[in-house]
Length: 175
View 1 (cartoon, rainbow, N blue to C red):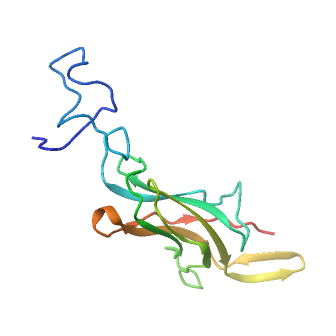
View 2 (cartoon, rainbow, N blue to C red):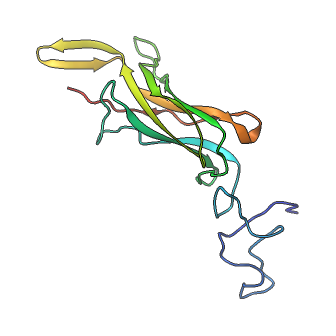
């Protein structure tokens, strides 16, 4: 029994419009009109951080980088009904131990926290990585370890439940 659960086939049809009137593509009292997606919807699953600098576009130490934090459901859809949860981006520790420990190997500053608006928060973060060596001839630097960013927050729609993203490596420009 599905009870009060609502399922949808992304608007593919209804019992009235189905070529087989005994086949209903919907269950429950009406269409899925959830604000967080036209397909089957679910509650919070994860936070996603988009725009983290990568090999093709690395970050420069101390310069601001725009990243977007998205609150996703189990189907990978942005939960646009959330415009009140607070999210932050922080430097995360690695799971690999080095002679310097597990980190985090950077300080993150700038606009590191924000309130979701339609399931998204645009943040402007600056990273100051830790270096283990700086050479003048030839000019080069070596990072103390991988710089990882992770989003976390408090879910206002789920009575303050904790939300997290996976840690993602922020690629730093070298030279």
